[in-house]
Length: 310
Image 1 (cartoon, rainbow, N blue to C red):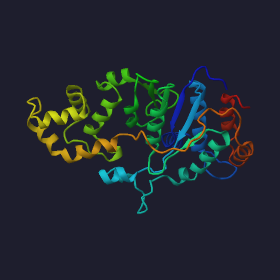
Image 2: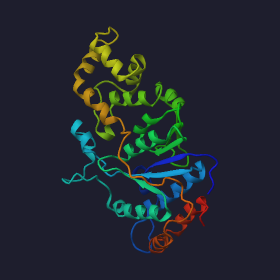
Image 3: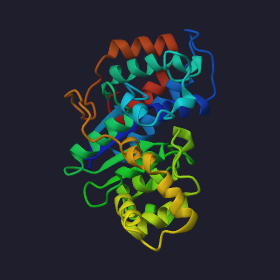
Image 4: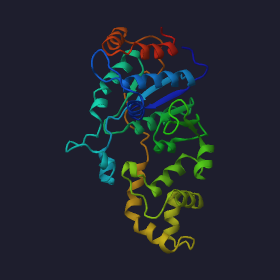
């Protein structure tokens, strides 16, 4: 496959394979192992590569879905998704069986897969986007709005291909104009500050009681940043009064630690691997075995076809 221009495509892998698992009907495979998440993931990969023609692509991985540095700061972080005493994430058994197949499929094709011990895929994405945004555009594919904080028109640019509503076929393309229109804020860092105030029940982040999204956005816009807001509170700014002041002051301990939990890491240690879109099939025998044993020939065919490797 030839690329018209350099572009880095970063995949929030778990976001995609969970979406595939719940969105693609299951059918029997020769092995008897469910394959809907694998087929859906590969089909999404093919569509994304066909549409954006990236020069580089990385499947970013959760080596640690609930890192200790975030849990130590806010113990409720993702606590509602813990499956058992081991601290493992609650994942349907039929999906759990397919994750190793997705790993093998990526290895067979030759698509880079990167994780970092002690960090989430979000942190891998944040690190790679930061490293490469000065040299090429970066597209982050995810259904997680937390990654809106990486949006940056000034370099790259970095934008989010947001799949939560329309899926991979009809995603929202999130840039700074999108953030201004939807939230009334300027840029990714302002989104992160807003997210701290608002909280996020899906991640177990409480936010500040009584501060919803609109109020959070207005406060960040008015005071420039979360730090600016806190300095205004400390200085007795008359614009912050009554119940709102009480709630913000009462949340001081939360506001001390939450920014480091919400912020994606931009310096996660990563192995030095080739991120370029493969120009040859990395392991034809592995792909052949997976295709035969699990009935994945057509999905592999779509990916290899758009890569020009058939």
